[in-house]
Image 1 (tube, rainbow, N blue to C red):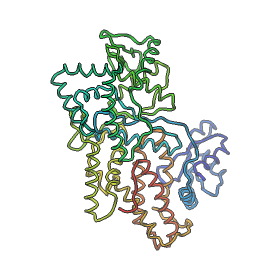
Image 2 (spheres, rainbow, N blue to C red; image 1 turned 135 degrees about the vertical axis):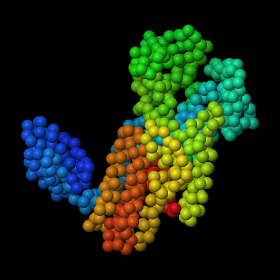
Image 3 (cartoon, rainbow, N blue to C red; image 1 turned 90 degrees about the vertical axis):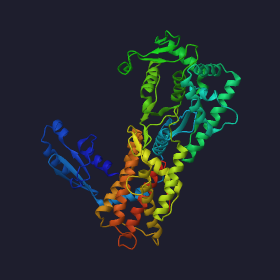
Image 4 (tube, rainbow, N blue to C red; image 1 turned 180 degrees about the vertical axis):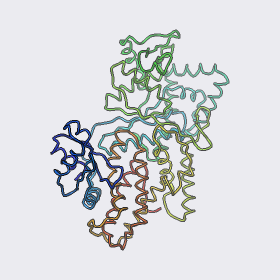
Amino acid sequence: MDFEIEIKKELKKILKKGVKLEIPPDSRLGDYSFPCFELAKEFKKDPNKIAKELSEKIINKNFRVENKGPYLNFFIDKEVFALWVIKGILNTKGLTKKKGKIILEHTSVNPNASPHVGRARNSIIGDSIKRILEFNGYKIETHYYVNDVSKQIAILALNFNSKNDFNDLLRIYVEVSKKIEENPELEKKVFELLNKFEKKDKKTVALFRKIVDIAVKGQKKIFSSIGINFDYFDYESDYINSSREVLKQLEKTGKLFKDEEGRMVLDQSGTRLEVKMKSPVLVLTRNDGTGLYPLRDLAYTLYKCKKGKNVIVLGEDQKLYFEQLKQALISLKRSYPEVVHYSFVLLKDVGKMSTRRGEVVLLDEFIGEAVKKAEKEIEKRKTKGDKKKIGIGAIKYAMLRNENNKNIIFDLEQALSFEGNSGPYLQYSYVRAASILKKARKKSNFKIVGLKEKEIELIKKLDEFKVVVEQASSSLNPSLIANYSFQLAQIFNEFYHLCPVIGSAEEGQRLAIVKAFLIVMKSSLWLLGIEVMEEM
């Protein structure tokens, strides 16, 4: 049974309408409370008197009720509650309720280099959102938008040859970018290549495709190595034709015009962009008629939104651009994606990263460093564990435990700590619980009797899991899961020290609590994309 629902039913029977319950700030005031202030206006009675009258009408064997001033306080039978929570977790068979389909776009790193650590935050947040939504019953399609018509590819094409591989891309990109800074005339060649590509010049198309294929294959391999995969790779070049149709549709709005430079521009005055821009316009083509990224992005977004609800993960530096895209879609009277913006990752002693200047810490190198440090930590502690799972888990947790809109100053030493708010601490808490079950000689039946305070606290925290997952799903905020996981691990470790399991008089019920903790912690870490181990 769900006690909150049961209490609401009892109140609804009497009041003939639905009610909202509160969680008291102090457990001594009950598990749930119902304030009667609003009823006082409706019934024109003192709220204290209403609370007293209601308390006398409610009789339920699973909870007791008492009034304290204008509040009805509900005290659930702790043993009934504990049995219900534990059995509910141990007997869970997964989701049966199916919800709608969601198109989730994330990562979309420019195919001009190996991804750096800062961009990985997009992927880690996106993958966690996918897991959270799936856990809540949604069918998720993950899409990766490949910017294969970008200026970055044209820059690479100026100095790319058949002997180059994925590891050469960043070096070539940085070298050519510096040459363009020194000699701006070179930029004309970049635009000439883009013009040729859009006009389907066979040699240019083949060169661009070769560079992009190498980049995408290399990026896929890196993301797959940390458990992040995609259902579809959508190529920007596939939307060149449909983007021309978007231009025609925008012409009908009366807001499209050709500016002094001969570019097609969308007038966005009269929208909320006027607060953010002196002259709110969205430039859609160059003066030679070739389309710019926003035009193709509009065509791509229209395609995605036809398939179902659309969610996209973007850096905070894309906030203004996304608002322009959104206003363009509103002009077309079309739906637009729900966006999740994330802030920058600042590495300790490195600061903000720039691909163009080559001032980056590459993700694959960073993972390698994390795995090495995890191995040293394992050796130092004279313990066991999968160094790769620990290293990757540390990176993911450190990226996810902060709110999406907060900058991260990433400290690898702190992230790999086995103590405190870190991925390894959570993984170790799981291993500690698993070792208790291994030591149990036999599976013992259990009944809930004489619960200690720390047992009740742990069971209550386990019961919160489903609510936290729903909140994380509705807000697209994985940090709620991360912070819940840490709190759960803390309470379990306190339980571990205060409540002996093996050989205790309460062995049966405590083994059941430990098993329930294992199930919830494993699910919670899975939602963060973090793997568990049996030894550590």
